[in-house]
Image 1 (cartoon, rainbow, N blue to C red):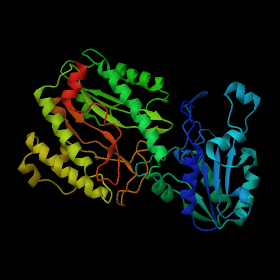
Image 2: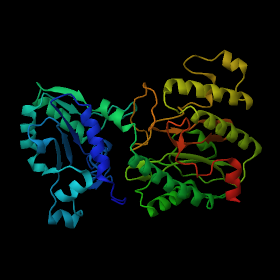
Image 3: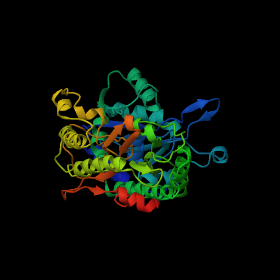
Image 4: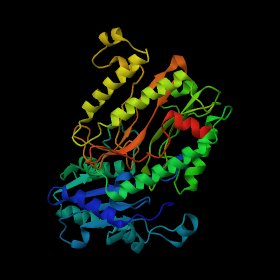
Length: 429
């Protein structure tokens, strides 16, 4: 790992929160991700399952966590199973965690090697009345690829049909959405690295550069600051490309007069940042570009005022839609006739602003959380309105990461990253 060791106290607290929500005399099991194959002997770089990382801090494949608060053997209330290291593994892959290191990372005292799992697992099941299994229940999850967790669940249900099954996801979505101070600090670190990337490219962008060259500048800055790289596939979209919401080809040359939409964010210690800025290739916005830019900025500034405890996200998005509608009328993109003829499920403003304004953020860029419950202090959201006008080869989206607080005003992790159009022009010139 590139990042500094995280205090094990964070993971101790996280496990305690999970255990407090479990039914009596039940256990929970969490599996690490696979190392995913590509072709031949090639694999993707390992990415730990965010749930087991959240509960242990272990960033290593073939790991299993068991939580059993009512275990008769006190040593078995928390157990970590790890792939046993060896001299051969150390030579070819690098050393894996030993038992002492695993305790220093996770705070879990009972650590067994993975080859002991089957035996101990049977002993635990014999006294448990139910088992919490960890399925991916994110609203936008793509679950076509079978994971290590999926295989474990399939095998468990086949071999233990009489055991009562509970869902870990509902607990994880609740507790992961409220960030501990250690997590807030890690998100801030990721945002600070992103800020360094923005400052770097503001000096780099000019007519003739290529989108992938800008991506490379970000990657350089992120890696230089102990990030593994991008928290998600970066979008570097110039001109009309900015009107494609998930444009990731990043293979066009940036022309004078165009705006570049940059949706990029560094990760740090598996925590995400998520930023969008729009930059004039020539160093100066045209009057029309600035008009649209300032309209989006106004919507963003008004929207983030609504990210306060007690807000319901469905109501939030409806209100942001009203604010956007007003701006689009001023820009002469829609009029009263469009509003009169709009459909209830597709308002007139959706023609130019077709995505949501905010999503949970944390260990996942699109983090888990309960959308139907009121916002609470400690939650982290993006705020990212946009206006997309293909006929003008213009797409503007502005995005910051915000911590909900009890003060009535969210804390902006990205407050130091240039946002005002005039400030961006000044820095580029």
